[in-house]
Image (cartoon, rainbow, N blue to C red; front, side, top):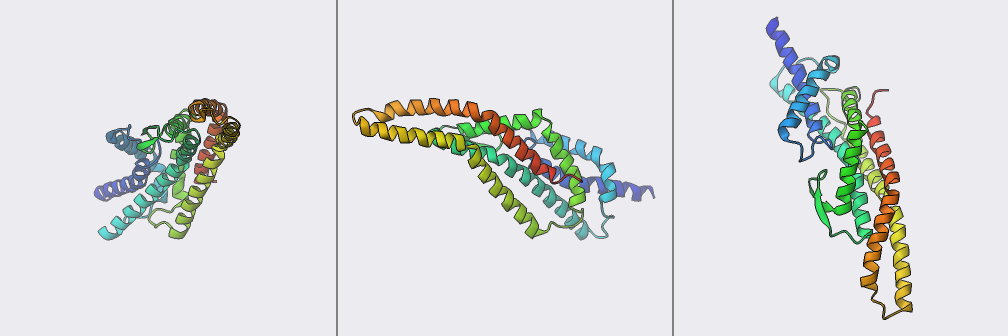
Length: 253
């Protein structure tokens, strides 16, 4: 009896860990290259210890064969990975907006290490990504991510695979929404840049001997930086609302 109870508890814990660990390995902030792998593992283990007792009622009974158990664990890992990918798509709106802004500001070739994408990104994209991650932590939005992960057990039944069509449709819709929102967030600088280029073109026609490039580029950088600082509060408010709404849909009603 004691052996059966012990096996059941171990099974329950590791089934929860399969989903939670996969999600934490991908979710923005937790999956940053600056966070050591051991810390992510310890954090995932600690979270599972806390949430396993209340989630035990949602879990299916112990599988009768190793193949069924392996399929069940694989399904949980896929769900956790899918949940994390949604978070990555949501925060990628800042990287896209930063790329657009860098293009309009003539800073597209100024590259730095992006802590979110874990690769080289434009200067403004890296700045916006880091600022967005700081706001996520400061506003306790990472608590919302963990709560949505726990409530996902009511939305995605444990032991069953994702519905491929619905899952792909949600990912495609989130990618489309993120791209559209990135364009909207970069719109103030796009309008400013187009207006400036129009004025610069007219000035070049009126004064052909004027060195437009040497005069125009420093002024463009200064103007776009000022515009970015003025628009930055609104940009980050729009991002935080979009990011939080993306996880609210996983919460239990």
